[in-house]
Image (cartoon, helix red, strand yellow):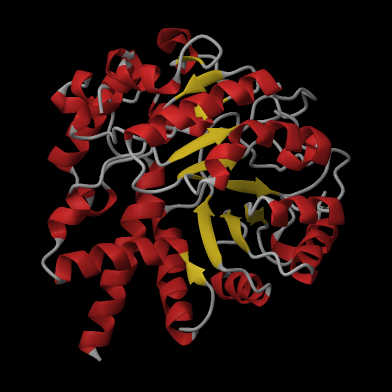
Length: 385
């Protein structure tokens, strides 16, 4: 609790004192080369050292000592974690084992599933690693996900999923929804639900990182997409949970039951993201490895030099964090949707507007505003009928 005493009230009112998640990037390399990928150095074949993992584990122990109300999530993400190989990845897990065995920490991995083997399945089962698979739908909608030779990755992704299912390993899915696929939500959802996944995440394509030239969907396209997604969900009440609809449903439930204050008390996760070398950025994993001299490349510190709690204790002094707080104030003062979305997503402000001290982004319009508008339009049509 000591660190919380040093945080200014303005920061503490917006940002959670204790992150629920640490994102670790064990390698920059990815064996795929997706058209919309935001990672700037995904061809580099480097990997995280055990020393960095050990330093993160020490910070994790300090964080759960401050607050052990829920297990700390360790998310292995970006590039492709399985590109490390089972042996090397196992060595990175070792420093976290005491916390995991004590139930104070849980591992998650986001993967393209093309490298899943029986050895990987053994490790996933042994360490109870929760898996998210990136797949954008059936082959016709998955055309942006290719390997470095331009070959479609769909068949290899499906082989990995088949292996996970054969070993009874639960998994979720995340699909990137582009201008090419946004008009086909039923095709997308039928396919993803048919995989037997526990939940479905729908990421409407964003301008971020090095993905700055492709044209993302519009709010009008997104509103229709969410309307049809809501309709699909109602037709399939026992199907896979849809992450975005669950969040909106949670908000509406709390408001309807007089518990709005519980929603408003939720704070934005600072999401410390640790790169291969131990460098840490806050607020948005997409800011990692971005060159931005005005913001000192968004560095909060290096875990080999100081702990993550110590970085969080001084986070309010970072220029980009201060600007983000200004942006949140602008959102709250000007946006009718703030009560629901709470004005998060620091990275989108930077990549779309060039500054975190700004308010609305296209991400807001297609992923937050369009979702609320879709539900409102659905309710209005049903009332009129």
